[in-house]
Image (cartoon, rainbow, N blue to C red):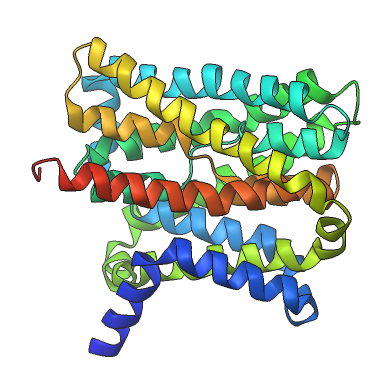
Length: 314
């Protein structure tokens, strides 16, 4: 039991570092991990199923008690973050349509599952973070395909109906299934709960391994584009986080609520973006999502620890 606890701590606490290390390994020896590329959709569905199992009933009540906070976080994310992603893509990546499409997709998916973890570390309002993630998950199967069709459909064919159906299958249904298990099989949930975070973290690492292994040749062919892509991704992540924090403070919300909304705005589920890019655009389009995954987890962890050090525990 102590060994499992130690492994859980080591993997989840240093998840950004593990992602960087394993992404590098997958780049060096991609043939080790190529079989994983056939399981990416299932793996993401597993993460979201586990998330559904751990959604507290209080998060549903929070929507009705604090609709303004939930509305502000979700709307800001689906307006400013999305528009910023579209703008950066059109300005800096217009000569590379697949990369541009993947970059825009990385900013047009639901919030990252790590957002709630980082909210907890920073002593933010975890239930608000979870509530926004739930709302995100339910509206994203409609909004994400619509955004992609509008933004890049004239450059790259986007099968809107197919994209909607896939997002329903690997996003919405697993979350609903997890919530059903929590309601009707609570004893199972209590048994599995200690391993949920470890399982989610290792599955996320496996997704990164699959995407990097599958796109190594394309990454090599576009190495000169990586510095620009990294810079654009930093802006894509940091600007929404900083701006929404200022907005929330001016609206009179508590700092703990502001920290929850901060991670909602800047951290997107780029594992989902990578899978959708591979299946609906190209392997090259998944590269921006991989870069975003590494950066948003690393920056999110750093920011969470910085905010946590300067904030009283809730």
